[in-house]
Image (cartoon, rainbow, N blue to C red):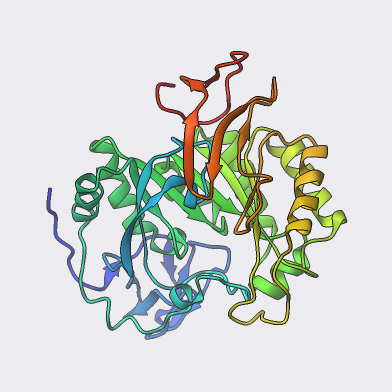
Amino acid sequence: MKQPVESKNHIGRWWHGSKDQRVICTLCPRYCNIPVGSQGFCYVRKNVNGKLITTAYGRSTGFAVDPIEKKPLYHFYPGSDVLSFGTIGCNLGCKFCQNWHISKNRNDRNLDRLFTPAEVVQIAIDNSCLGIAYTYNDPIIFGEWVIDIATIARENGLKNVLVTNGFITSSARADIFTQADAINVDLKAFEPEFYRKLTLSHLEPVLDTLRWLVHETDIWIEITTLIIPEENDSAKELNRLTNFIAEELNVDIPLHFSAFHPDFKLRDRPRTSAATLEKAYSIAKNNGLNHVYLGNINTRKGQDTYCSQCGAILIQRNYYQVGELQLDAGQCRYCGHQVPGCFKGG
């Protein structure tokens, strides 16, 4: 299964040349115009002698076997394990980043061990994993490696899971995202100013990605929104966000509201309270979303999966631990309703 990794400097995709040996990266909507010897915003895409090089290819910050619920994915083979890994860097500049020690890491000297795509797949197989989760930092920026690993993973019967911010160009997303079986998109807010001020990016490309994923692919989609006090927790914004999902996407898409804790460059906000998350939960349910969950907080509300038809509890959870599933091939055992998602036997 082995195949060579040629070097730490792997020729990238999604770019074209410009004057003075500059390169224009077309991977994400930043379209970084990179002079020779410099990196793009994400740090791992570099201009070497007029060619775009990805220094992330083959280089991982570490591997872990995680429950699929940790991604979070609650309707994708619940109770299964996935092999999780990432690299360094990110194409967003979130001031509240809770993985900043990875996404903002500029010391890649300790990532000298190179892994071939086949080796990553073998690690997943050796650990009896359902598949591979490309996570921790954003898989968009190491898309070349994602594609190569995902291709071999599928040949070996493994699933591919991406956890992403969705800030990607239409051409690149068709290459990278269609390799996935499931994707959790981090919809950080529903105000353009929030994206501009707190992530140094833009909202609309993320919404375009969500529309495309839901309406033009068969990939299983879930959405996560980190609720930050005084930034994106108003009833007005939560109504707009959840109405977008209900009206432009699908009421059956699971939505995860996650609790914020002060970190990185946003330490002057309090932790998200249970009351705030429960308010968000109620707004989402009132706007017609069938499956809403709460994470990063000790509360029973928003943990379990209910049948949207008869109201029975179908999947009980205690943090990332899953109890007995009241499902038969994805159908509610009580009323026969087909629960949206991907389940064993379905």
